[in-house]
Length: 423
Image 1 (spheres, rainbow, N blue to C red):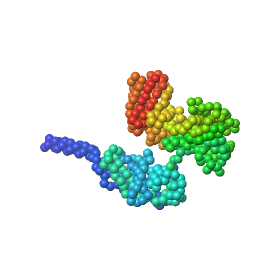
Image 2 (image 1 turned 180 degrees about the vertical axis):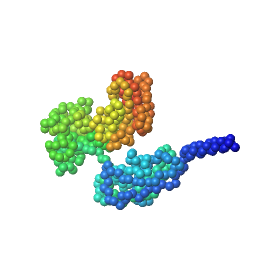
Image 3 (image 1 turned 30 degrees about the vertical axis):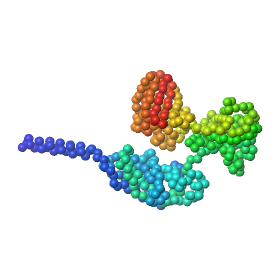
Image 4 (image 1 turned 135 degrees about the vertical axis):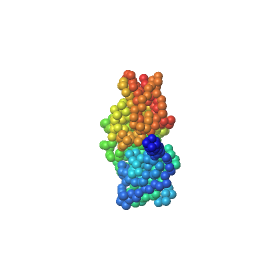
């Protein structure tokens, strides 16, 4: 009997282990219920702002096990969602059932749903009114199409939008071609045809261009960033209010440094016709103007940022924009390939990239690296070169460098690959 008792006990223990093992194995199931709660601030009057958020609280879909779920929202201006726009949750809350959406994204969705593309249409469509806006939550497991589930509809009843669409910035050409009318607000209509604009794909670059038909004998001008009068916001060849003559364009082009001042550029031998002018104010310590005979299109230089031991491990946030001017890779041709060369010391070299600088700092969602996880990934150079893919994430490429060197970096955003050359 004693032996039989021991055998029965062992069998029970074995069954218990088997049962526990089965309990631990996750079994995916397609969820059928997903509820979005009525917002706590549903009836409050809310003036939407660029940096504000709205909170949405939903139940967790039952996938059969505890799964990392991605949340987003659909936005509509009608309760039946005949038309709607999907917006992402903020990066810090994108895997939480209690998640937030950017008020700026909500504004952009509202404008898009009403086909608003300019401030005049915005005023006609929304005016100064509060609007009822409808929301649905969306939950999905990454890479699992059948896991997508959409919630019921709730609303924020009183949201006041603002014109959230970023528009290209502009500056003014002031001088003989427009008749020296005077850079004042009262002359805003006069100066409308004499503006130089940022390109649509280069908003915020502070690089402006324009094509002007300038008659012979009238090629004298400087630039103003605002219509505040003669004595402020002026940029020219020198500080003093004296024109400087430049006899000719070399090979059809002229480039000069630009300073804060009232010294006009003068081209006495200009034969007349169209002139393309590009003013680069992106670096206040290295401002330039380029003039070209004829009509030319501007390709705005775009940048991404090197984040790592080379750049001193500064957070890739907007607060560090000045610091990162020294750690940029540039695409000056518009082909999606960013390049840069950097001096590196001997020892461990670890880095990744940020496609832009954002308010999230270290949680910047645009970071790309060797892996998703925030960790060092060790690699070596083969004959001085390394090539490989990148992913959306915070994993670093890590190399051990024997001696101080220069590293040439190319990041191809088309093929999502990187190439490094050490010399």
